Image 1 (cartoon, one colour):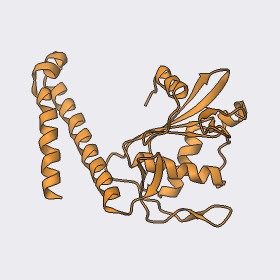
Image 2 (image 1 turned 45 degrees about the horizontal axis):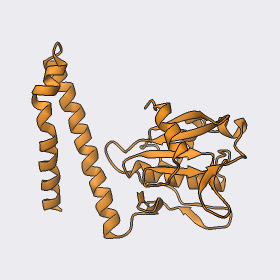
Image 3 (image 1 turned 120 degrees about the vertical axis):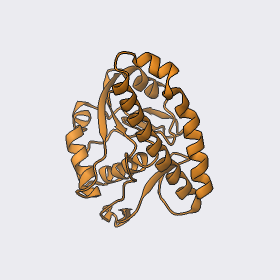
Length: 223
Protein backbone atom coordinates (compact mmCIF):
# COMPACT_ATOMS: atom_id res chain seq x y z
CA UNK A 1 0.00 0.00 0.00
CA UNK A 2 1.53 3.31 -1.11
CA UNK A 3 1.42 5.82 1.70
CA UNK A 4 0.67 9.54 1.28
CA UNK A 5 3.75 11.41 2.54
CA UNK A 6 1.62 14.40 3.55
CA UNK A 7 -0.49 12.22 5.79
CA UNK A 8 2.57 10.61 7.36
CA UNK A 9 4.13 14.01 8.02
CA UNK A 10 0.89 15.02 9.73
CA UNK A 11 1.26 11.98 11.99
CA UNK A 12 4.71 13.27 12.95
CA UNK A 13 3.54 16.82 13.49
CA UNK A 14 0.64 15.79 15.73
CA UNK A 15 2.14 12.77 17.44
CA UNK A 16 -0.50 11.15 19.63
CA UNK A 17 -0.59 7.41 20.27
CA UNK A 18 -3.86 5.59 19.66
CA UNK A 19 -5.17 2.17 18.70
CA UNK A 20 -4.20 3.06 15.09
CA UNK A 21 -0.88 4.85 15.59
CA UNK A 22 2.16 4.02 17.70
CA UNK A 23 5.52 5.77 18.09
CA UNK A 24 8.80 4.13 19.04
CA UNK A 25 12.24 5.41 20.00
CA UNK A 26 15.09 5.49 17.50
CA UNK A 27 16.41 1.95 17.89
CA UNK A 28 17.82 -0.06 15.00
CA UNK A 29 15.95 -3.17 13.94
CA UNK A 30 17.94 -6.29 14.79
CA UNK A 31 16.41 -9.76 14.78
CA UNK A 32 15.90 -11.40 18.19
CA UNK A 33 16.75 -8.30 20.22
CA UNK A 34 14.27 -7.05 22.84
CA UNK A 35 13.14 -3.95 20.92
CA UNK A 36 12.48 -5.95 17.75
CA UNK A 37 10.62 -8.70 19.60
CA UNK A 38 8.32 -6.10 21.17
CA UNK A 39 7.90 -4.48 17.75
CA UNK A 40 6.62 -7.78 16.34
CA UNK A 41 4.04 -7.93 19.14
CA UNK A 42 2.74 -4.49 18.16
CA UNK A 43 2.68 -5.47 14.48
CA UNK A 44 0.53 -8.50 15.33
CA UNK A 45 -1.75 -6.27 17.38
CA UNK A 46 -2.27 -3.82 14.53
CA UNK A 47 -2.83 -6.58 11.98
CA UNK A 48 -5.62 -8.01 14.15
CA UNK A 49 -7.18 -4.62 14.87
CA UNK A 50 -7.84 -2.97 11.54
CA UNK A 51 -4.25 -2.05 10.66
CA UNK A 52 -2.28 1.05 11.56
CA UNK A 53 1.05 2.88 11.63
CA UNK A 54 4.16 2.39 13.75
CA UNK A 55 6.58 5.30 13.42
CA UNK A 56 10.20 4.97 14.53
CA UNK A 57 12.05 8.00 15.85
CA UNK A 58 9.97 9.65 18.56
CA UNK A 59 10.26 9.31 22.32
CA UNK A 60 8.63 10.75 25.42
CA UNK A 61 10.17 13.75 27.13
CA UNK A 62 11.83 13.05 30.47
CA UNK A 63 9.46 15.33 32.40
CA UNK A 64 6.35 16.13 30.35
CA UNK A 65 5.86 12.72 28.65
CA UNK A 66 5.13 14.52 25.37
CA UNK A 67 6.31 12.71 22.25
CA UNK A 68 9.32 14.43 20.70
CA UNK A 69 11.84 13.70 17.99
CA UNK A 70 14.47 11.26 19.22
CA UNK A 71 17.80 12.92 18.48
CA UNK A 72 19.44 9.48 18.26
CA UNK A 73 17.68 8.86 14.96
CA UNK A 74 20.23 8.68 12.13
CA UNK A 75 20.53 7.18 8.67
CA UNK A 76 21.97 3.90 9.96
CA UNK A 77 18.97 3.34 12.20
CA UNK A 78 16.53 4.37 9.46
CA UNK A 79 18.16 2.05 6.90
CA UNK A 80 17.86 -0.94 9.26
CA UNK A 81 14.08 -0.87 8.64
CA UNK A 82 13.84 -2.68 5.31
CA UNK A 83 10.51 -4.23 4.39
CA UNK A 84 11.79 -7.62 3.20
CA UNK A 85 13.95 -8.13 6.26
CA UNK A 86 11.26 -7.06 8.74
CA UNK A 87 8.56 -9.09 6.96
CA UNK A 88 10.69 -12.22 7.00
CA UNK A 89 11.29 -11.87 10.73
CA UNK A 90 7.61 -11.27 11.50
CA UNK A 91 6.51 -14.14 9.30
CA UNK A 92 9.04 -16.51 10.90
CA UNK A 93 7.16 -16.01 14.17
CA UNK A 94 3.80 -16.58 12.50
CA UNK A 95 4.72 -19.84 10.78
CA UNK A 96 4.78 -20.88 7.14
CA UNK A 97 1.05 -20.51 6.45
CA UNK A 98 0.67 -16.82 7.38
CA UNK A 99 2.01 -13.59 5.89
CA UNK A 100 1.46 -10.08 7.20
CA UNK A 101 1.32 -7.30 4.62
CA UNK A 102 3.78 -4.55 5.63
CA UNK A 103 4.84 -1.31 3.97
CA UNK A 104 7.78 0.79 5.15
CA UNK A 105 8.06 4.42 4.06
CA UNK A 106 11.01 6.65 5.01
CA UNK A 107 9.40 10.00 5.83
CA UNK A 108 11.66 13.08 5.46
CA UNK A 109 10.96 15.51 8.30
CA UNK A 110 13.20 18.09 9.97
CA UNK A 111 16.39 16.77 8.37
CA UNK A 112 15.75 13.20 9.44
CA UNK A 113 14.21 10.14 7.80
CA UNK A 114 11.56 8.48 9.95
CA UNK A 115 10.74 4.82 9.19
CA UNK A 116 6.96 4.49 9.05
CA UNK A 117 5.65 0.93 9.14
CA UNK A 118 2.13 0.44 7.84
CA UNK A 119 0.47 -2.80 8.94
CA UNK A 120 -2.52 -4.05 6.96
CA UNK A 121 -5.56 -5.75 8.46
CA UNK A 122 -5.71 -9.53 8.05
CA UNK A 123 -7.65 -10.66 4.98
CA UNK A 124 -9.18 -13.97 6.02
CA UNK A 125 -8.37 -14.78 9.63
CA UNK A 126 -6.62 -13.25 12.64
CA UNK A 127 -2.91 -13.90 13.10
CA UNK A 128 -1.84 -16.34 15.82
CA UNK A 129 1.62 -16.23 17.32
CA UNK A 130 3.30 -19.56 16.57
CA UNK A 131 6.27 -19.26 18.95
CA UNK A 132 6.95 -18.39 22.57
CA UNK A 133 9.75 -15.82 22.72
CA UNK A 134 11.33 -14.37 25.85
CA UNK A 135 13.13 -11.09 26.36
CA UNK A 136 16.68 -10.94 27.66
CA UNK A 137 15.37 -10.64 31.24
CA UNK A 138 13.35 -13.86 30.91
CA UNK A 139 9.97 -12.15 30.53
CA UNK A 140 7.65 -13.73 27.96
CA UNK A 141 7.01 -11.19 25.20
CA UNK A 142 5.27 -13.45 22.68
CA UNK A 143 3.29 -16.55 23.59
CA UNK A 144 2.60 -19.53 21.35
CA UNK A 145 -1.07 -19.70 20.37
CA UNK A 146 -1.85 -16.15 21.50
CA UNK A 147 -3.77 -13.55 19.49
CA UNK A 148 -2.70 -9.94 20.08
CA UNK A 149 -4.89 -6.87 19.48
CA UNK A 150 -4.77 -3.12 20.05
CA UNK A 151 -7.06 -1.72 22.74
CA UNK A 152 -7.93 1.79 23.96
CA UNK A 153 -5.00 3.38 25.71
CA UNK A 154 -2.65 2.57 22.82
CA UNK A 155 -1.83 -0.83 24.25
CA UNK A 156 -1.19 -4.17 22.61
CA UNK A 157 -2.60 -7.07 24.65
CA UNK A 158 -3.31 -10.75 24.35
CA UNK A 159 -6.98 -11.52 23.71
CA UNK A 160 -8.40 -12.62 27.04
CA UNK A 161 -11.76 -11.22 28.20
CA UNK A 162 -15.13 -10.86 26.51
CA UNK A 163 -14.43 -7.27 25.46
CA UNK A 164 -11.27 -8.33 23.62
CA UNK A 165 -13.13 -11.09 21.81
CA UNK A 166 -15.87 -8.63 20.81
CA UNK A 167 -13.25 -6.37 19.22
CA UNK A 168 -11.69 -9.28 17.37
CA UNK A 169 -15.05 -10.56 16.11
CA UNK A 170 -15.90 -7.07 14.85
CA UNK A 171 -12.65 -7.01 12.87
CA UNK A 172 -13.46 -10.42 11.39
CA UNK A 173 -16.85 -9.15 10.28
CA UNK A 174 -15.26 -6.00 8.84
CA UNK A 175 -12.67 -8.03 6.93
CA UNK A 176 -15.38 -10.24 5.43
CA UNK A 177 -17.35 -7.17 4.36
CA UNK A 178 -14.29 -5.60 2.71
CA UNK A 179 -13.66 -8.85 0.82
CA UNK A 180 -17.27 -8.92 -0.32
CA UNK A 181 -17.09 -5.27 -1.40
CA UNK A 182 -13.95 -5.85 -3.50
CA UNK A 183 -15.48 -8.87 -5.19
CA UNK A 184 -18.71 -7.01 -5.92
CA UNK A 185 -16.80 -4.13 -7.51
CA UNK A 186 -14.79 -6.54 -9.65
CA UNK A 187 -17.93 -8.30 -10.85
CA UNK A 188 -19.78 -5.07 -11.63
CA UNK A 189 -16.76 -3.60 -13.42
CA UNK A 190 -16.60 -6.67 -15.66
CA UNK A 191 -20.31 -6.40 -16.43
CA UNK A 192 -20.15 -2.66 -17.17
CA UNK A 193 -16.57 -1.99 -18.35
CA UNK A 194 -17.50 1.16 -20.28
CA UNK A 195 -19.46 2.92 -17.54
CA UNK A 196 -17.78 2.36 -14.17
CA UNK A 197 -18.79 5.78 -12.87
CA UNK A 198 -22.47 5.11 -13.60
CA UNK A 199 -22.29 1.76 -11.86
CA UNK A 200 -20.64 3.34 -8.84
CA UNK A 201 -23.13 6.18 -8.51
CA UNK A 202 -26.40 4.65 -9.72
CA UNK A 203 -25.93 0.93 -9.76
CA UNK A 204 -25.86 -1.76 -7.16
CA UNK A 205 -22.82 -0.40 -5.34
CA UNK A 206 -24.83 2.40 -3.77
CA UNK A 207 -26.80 -0.24 -1.85
CA UNK A 208 -23.74 -1.92 -0.33
CA UNK A 209 -23.55 0.29 2.80
CA UNK A 210 -27.13 -0.70 3.66
CA UNK A 211 -26.24 -4.33 3.03
CA UNK A 212 -23.27 -3.95 5.36
CA UNK A 213 -25.49 -2.65 8.18
CA UNK A 214 -27.87 -5.57 7.73
CA UNK A 215 -24.93 -7.95 7.71
CA UNK A 216 -23.50 -6.54 10.94
CA UNK A 217 -26.92 -6.62 12.60
CA UNK A 218 -27.39 -10.26 11.64
CA UNK A 219 -23.96 -11.20 12.99
CA UNK A 220 -24.73 -9.54 16.34
CA UNK A 221 -28.01 -11.46 16.53
CA UNK A 222 -26.22 -14.74 15.93
CA UNK A 223 -23.51 -13.95 18.49
